[in-house]
Length: 221
Image (cartoon, rainbow, N blue to C red; front, top):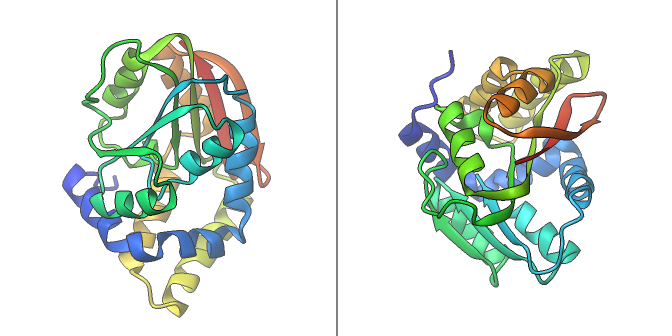
């Protein structure tokens, strides 16, 4: 199993933060931003909503939410201080805090929406993180999860291309080897939905992208 020790994950994302956005754009041929925008639209975010973006990384979700619903208040949380610096530079009006998804510094029933994109896969104790997500969501609040999806042919193409791209661009190969390993060990969408339901979250919607290689799920408390 892939080592997901929190300190190791923090160090890895601190290291790759200077070129994280560049690599995402190249690996996805720019489609990752379009996918994020499409699924966030499905939330139909209401005015003046309180939104928690977990594993916020460099702040893509925050930026898109600001465009879709400018009156919403977004708090981004991430374990990597270097990723948060980039997020803040891209979203100067939003709040970003250093934190742990398995021990959230918020009250019960505080948020209308909780989002997490390409982040739950990196958390060592996924069950505890889902418990915390459930705790901080308001009744009938919605949870959006986006990450790699089915372990299919489209995903195998990604596995083949990413190490080549990282090598050509002289990026940290071990980090992108971790990306592939964590992707292939991660439960497929239908298995994840069972985990979400076990945490008390009720299925609302599932959307697949790029022949199912990327998948998003929306659940309600």
